[in-house]
Length: 416
Image (tube, rainbow, N blue to C red; front, top):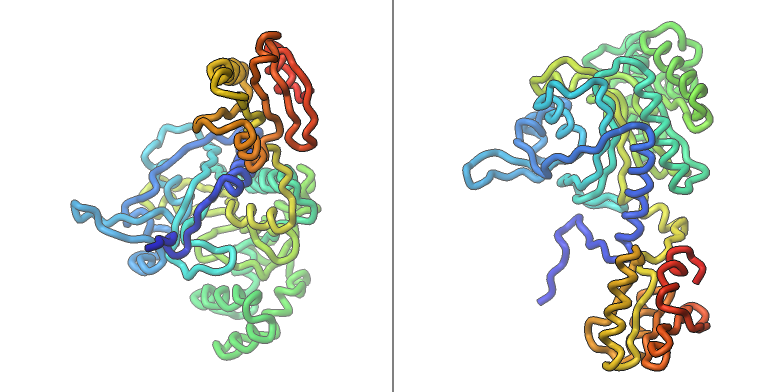
């Protein structure tokens, strides 16, 4: 009998974990460079907390991992890292504001698994709570841009929209406010249905499809300064230029995903082409909706599974092995001395593997090669008499005799 991973999940073998760790380490360095502090929250929350986002209520049970615990309490696995942040803020009212936090962890959604879309996935978030200023939104966008640059992306961009602007624009065209959300849902299908498909659906719903598509495709510029949210969007783009990320942003009124939840600016990160790997925006009502104070908030999130997949497909990873060397005794008589060398190297900060199964030298070198360990330290009786070992480069097979006392310095400096 063979056991498979649950639907929508996957294992992360060592090679894939190295990629994930590279991504998380890179993002963490950028987050902390910008003054964001790390927090962690439980993987599961009370259902009432999860149901508060966007006013989803009972309907969200169909989209999350929902269950009752042994005390009959309603529980759900978190589906993002933002709702737990809002609950954290409410439970810690004295935390200094604005509060700049980052979080990296798993989340779960009971969606139908699709290409690059899993039921269990890794996320990395930065959020700023307690600032109404667009400088907070610009800060989150700056973090996102630096993250993409630090990971090695060259042709990425971030789509930017504003809920207030889009709502006001459509209402100025005679669309009733209570129909705006339905309109957003259809526009959101542009990637899936194409322009013709969206035009058809808009017409079926009684909207002037051609006028709406014209507005989205640039016709809005004639009305740019006449509706609410226009100045806000313009100011955000000005701030982006000031902080040096203006070229990475594109105003795109077709970006409507999540506008039922977001209250102002909204962003989506694209790693070139049409592949999205992150998004976010301003959500000034969430903390209040959870029963907390009326605190503004904004943030942006990366999908780490998506980033790893994109970077793998684009052959962007150039990862050095974590384990630098394998200490390989020639025979049982040199095994104890080999263990002493292993311990001494580890004490000096060298990532070092050792034989734990009694393999013969040839098999041990084959094993080290299969793990792409760059160096083997061959411990033989002849060399030990001279307080030395043989250092083998596993890539080219070249060997040289090295004094034991010099090993750690050579391996740490890369002069091996």
